[in-house]
Image 1 (cartoon, rainbow, N blue to C red):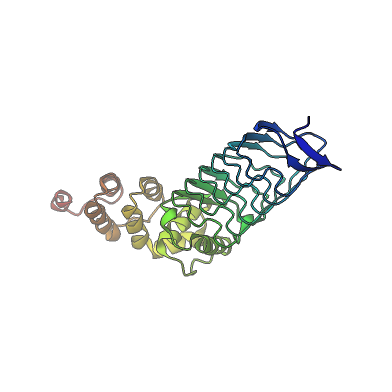
Image 2: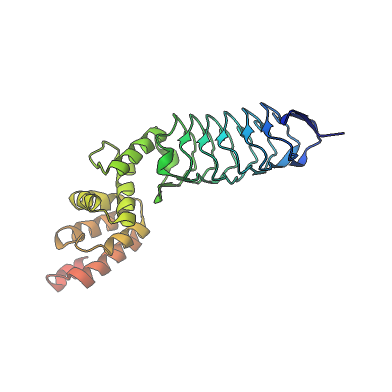
Length: 294
């Protein structure tokens, strides 16, 4: 007996016992809720004959851990994988253009997600409450994001927008999705006057400059340099401090002593050593007493 109810190329219902499921190659479309809340399935292979997956197809499949998607699918519809709480990773094929509303909402085991460069839209609550999501790469083409696309992703620690990587506690940022939309606008237009909290604005501008060497970004960094570095010290971001010390004429006699003192006050010992060594090698001291005081 077949494990599938198929009519005219449409898979209407899965009736099997679960485990590793391979969808037949005569299927062109998977119908709405075909696998809804089937806790028996653990993996699914979707052949390239499948061009359409309708709404909530795998929603609530709590033991689904792995999916191979068809390379001919352009849209992931509403709730496709919502509440698939065991799904840890999934490869989105280059064919996908749209990640619809709530597609991965409640996928609490998802940890790392790369959104392909061909994705043009990410819907409302697409990754809502993916509480173990740690890193996401979002191409510029996917902005603006749908409302609450990344709300309640409380362990999100790394975000990349068009390759500009920032590591911080994004899970604690209120209205993260809205602020990411502002950030993407700012970087695309090189409009650094955009009103955005420094905890988002500063690290993305620095990441943008380090990748592009854009002069407009460099001008902004120079103008706000002490504030930017003070924020980086507070985050104990050693990698970014090291990158900035490689840029000519950012650290000066006028600002470095204050920044060294900030590193001392914040207990950022490694950054303190980096700045102290930079001063010793590139700026020097007016007298030995000042060196000993530091």
